[in-house]
Each structure stands twice: as C-alpha cells, then as structure tokens.
Length: 369
View: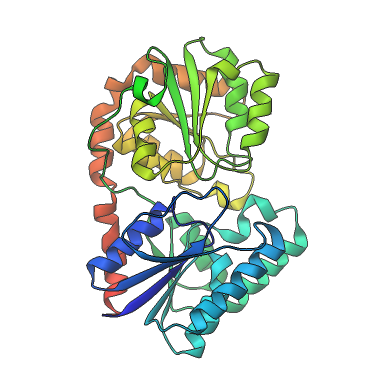
C-alpha cells in the first residue's frame, strides 16, 4: 500500500476540502497521514485517519510559519512516503524540498490565490517573501490543483502552466436526523440569516450585514457559526448598534453539526468584499452547503459566487455593500420564501456535488498508484 502525507497549517478538524480529498486517496488504496497543528481551542480529531498535530510555540506571524515549516521539514525527513500533498503555499516549502530530496512526486493544492489574501496586502515585505517563494517553486511543480477557474486562469497567466480545478463543493451528506430550532437554541419564529465557516474575517461583509440588520424587521436575526479574526470586532459592533439580541454567535462545529444550523436557517449569506484578489475570485464552500441544505442565499457580486447564484436563480446578488442594498436583497429573498427556490436548489445540488467533483482527483491520484 502506497503512503501519502497530506499537510495543512490548520488544526485538521474543520478542513472539509482536505478531508474529502483524503477520502478519494483512501478509496484508491492509499494510506494517508494527515498533518497539521493543535491549537488551544482545537476540537478532538475523531476521523478514522492517521494524523499528527504539532503543538507549536507560536500561533501567528513569521515565527509561527518558521516554527511550523521547520517542524514539518524534519517530520517529513525521517518518514517514508510515496506521495506528498501540500495544501496552500504556507505548507509548500518543506514538501517541495523533501520531495526533491527523496525523488518522490508532489501534488500542490492551492485553496486560494495565496499571494492575494487580504492579510498581506498592506504588508509589502511579508507579501514579497511569499511571492518570491511561490515564484521559486511554482514553475517546478508538475501537478497543481486549485479551487476554481478564475484562480486557475490567474496562475496560468503568471506561470504559463495548466492548472487542474477541483471546486470546493460539499458532498451530499446531511445529518441523519435534523434537530429542531429548540434543540439548537434558536428562536422558533425568527427569520434566520446564517453566515458560517472557519473564515469569518475582516472584509467578508459581516460588518455591513450588521449595519443592515436594524433596517430589517425585528424578527430577522443573524446567526454566525464558526471562527475568524473578525469575531471580536463584530461582538463589539453588535453592542454599539444595540442589536445583541438579534445576533447569535456559535463557535466552530464539527461539519455535520454545523449543517444542523444551516438546515435550520432561512437564508444563507456570502458577502465577501472584492478588496483583495483572493476574495475577488473566491468561491466559498458554504455556498454549496446552502444549496444542499435547501436554503436560498444573498451574495456579493464577486465573479464565481454570483455566477452560481444567477445561473440557478437561487437567491439575490447585492448591488453594493451599502446597508440599504443588503436590506433590499434580503427582503426579496424573504418575500419569495424558501419554497419558491426549492426546485432550483435541488437542480443545483444535483449538478454541483463532491460525488461529481472528486472524479478530477481520482484521475490525478491514479497516475501515482
């Protein structure tokens, strides 16, 4: 049985894309080891997959990346693997060096346009380091995958390489039994807007959503499920706007438990702002979670997301991030009602799911068997 090591810089638990990818590897007969890190608030990793999580001295900034990459380099150096799968630029260097040293194949899966992430746009030295690293390694990579055609086209224009696309699409799983709103601690008679995921960060539209909330009827509430660097500021903003009683915060959840909240909601939100190349061309997997849970959505007018919503007619695209425009879009979806969108959502779910998308991974990994 061939062995593959799959590396990320997160804590493994909430990375559904990589978990699905490992599932494809296992179905093809590979033995996978999933490597990431353990944080103070990390949930237990309970999936039946060999794994290793580093407890690091630092959790952010240069020292974190240096600490993680050094630990990963020596972890890989003293273990034998037949295939290396690196997820995102921040785990690529050790994988690249070891794969070259041991003459083993490397697959690079770029979950985003990494050098375009908002966190580094105003940090020229940090950005320059990542760009230099990418420009050194990327031309030498033989197998590169990314999450949508827009990002694949960006990479092709920069490096002249054909990039495979595996979209960040959910599988068809839903909880075996859906919990009631009472069981989830949610108001029974409210119109619930949900924003979910591990990237509830600045410039993802939640600040503007909060400003729109007072313009909507009192029974409309906002449910935020997940984690991210914007959360502390959002909680302060809720107090400033005096809308704490209309916003429900829930911490990050295991995937199927998170879907309990999604299925209980009335409308999904994906309001990323095109303030960075990464957000401009993103296609969050929560869009497809909303689809399979049968809830319409209100989304921002960014390339990949609006394309899905407009093609299938499964929600509204906001004209701008002005509170008034967000309010108008939500009112349109609310007035139409969930039932109005159900047939289109079913069609979108049938045509956009992991069962279809994984075939691309299957073709890629088969060549390494």
